[in-house]
Amino acid sequence: MEVEKENTTSTITEEPSIPASDGQDLVSSVNTSLPHSIQPVIPPVIAPSVVPPLAPIPAIPPPRPLAPLPVRPPVIRPPVPQNGEVGSSDSDSDNDDSNTRINKGPGEYEISEESRLVRERQEKAMQELMMKRRAAALAVPTNDMAVRARLRHLGEPITLFGEREMERRDRLRMIMAKLDAEGQLEKLMKAHEDEEAAASAPKDEAEEELQYPFYTEGSKALLDARIYIAKYSLARAALRIQRAQRRRDDPDEDMDAEMDWALKQAGNLSLEFSEIGDDRPLSGCSFSRDGKWLATCSLTGASKLWSMPKIKKHSTIKGHTERATDVAYSPTHDHLATASADRTAKYWNDQGSLLKTFEGHLDRLARIAFHPSGKYLGTASFDKTWRLWDIETGDELLLQEGHSRSVYGLAFHRDGSLAASCGLDALARVWDLRTGRSILALEGHVKPVLGVSFSPNGYHLATGGEDNTCRIWDLRKKKSFYTIPAHANLISQVKFEPQEGYFLVTASYDMTAKVWSGRDFKPVKTLSGHEAKVTSVDVLADGGYIVTASHDRTIKLWSSNTTNEQQAMDVD
Image (cartoon, rainbow, N blue to C red; front, top):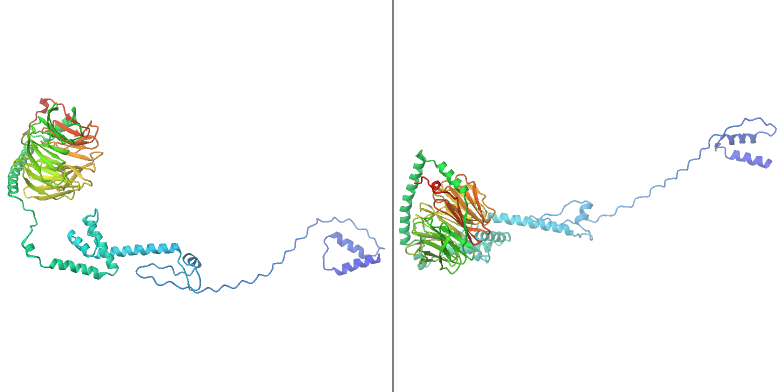
């Protein structure tokens, strides 16, 4: 018992600083310190709720010292870029270094593949820009012969396959710019000196005696023809102007009413006859001057004569060795001319007898046309020329150049003073037959021009081509004043109504022919019925009939079905 008391006392004395956790421990400790003789009455004490002790917070270890930074090797910069080269970035950031350089050792670096490609592209673009600047500053000859001579002196091919004059000049410009960029100015200057020496070298006596004129001298027959055409055209133009003034001043003349009547008749056009024209596709058709005969030609090379208006076959004309390309009746008598791919044109009488053969073209013929006087025949050819022939003698009077590509269509002014040609160079030209000059170059079509026609009013010209449009040109203003989006395919031929020009007819490869008003060029009638592309069209002198020829081998005659009383008009 004493031992227990001692242990208890020692426990209390050893841990005086630890507080009691609750009241019960405190009471028990007091009871042990009192003598056993005193036993006071102690009321029961309600123990409070036990609160669990908090978990001890672990101690935070002291931070470890940081490792020393590695010593960075020195970076060697690339050489300074020259000649417009774009250098790499000078940034010292780790991102730039990781993207553009790979450190392989002290003093060594390597540019990444992506950066190298970017640099090469930039260098190439800069070199091209500088090359173009040098080329723009160089003086290049404009004459094609001088360009060829310069290329020959530089040791370059004087021409390439399919190369045109402007392309050849651009090639010379780039070659000279390249030589300038490479510092080979001596070679360039030597070539220039050689050219000047060749130009200034004394010519031989034989060459000095030959003095070439700037124009082509014509024959005496051409001079006589020009004089005749001038007299003929002046008289015809005076009559045309006099009649136009009288119609304008005469109160009884109502031109609007006449045009309305003509357009009404054109709007009533319908298919009257359809006939198989040949075994192969048809290429041309033409009415005679009195409207009693119709001529057609085909790819067989033969031409046929048909009686009007029932389209009954009268005779067949054979003489060409290749396909026939066009046929035309003379405006003064019942003779006709045919053109062919055998490079010849032939002149026939109404019985089918051959009168003349016109030879001289170097390639196949396209369209042909008679001069209004009936004394001359014009032929267009794929040899880039059109020619004028004398009907009586069969001589070639004029060989006219001026188109850069094949000439396809040809037409003469009603007065006989002008001729219009069109070709595959997307250009139409107007020529003065009295002087031989090209007075107008009509640019507007974007594709080859295949058809051309003068209006009887004297100042309108219609052209149609592969761009599916028909353009109306005013010769007084020297420009196009109306464009008709006529067809869904190329226009093969255009024809004005030959008496007054009240309407215009276009034939197309979309298997239709269309009639357009001569006043505002609005559509009047669509002639549908062919089963293949329409190659040719012609209009009778009074506008009562229209004939079309097609690759479906048929001839179709369109008529307004009017009586003789309705057709009677007050026409001078």
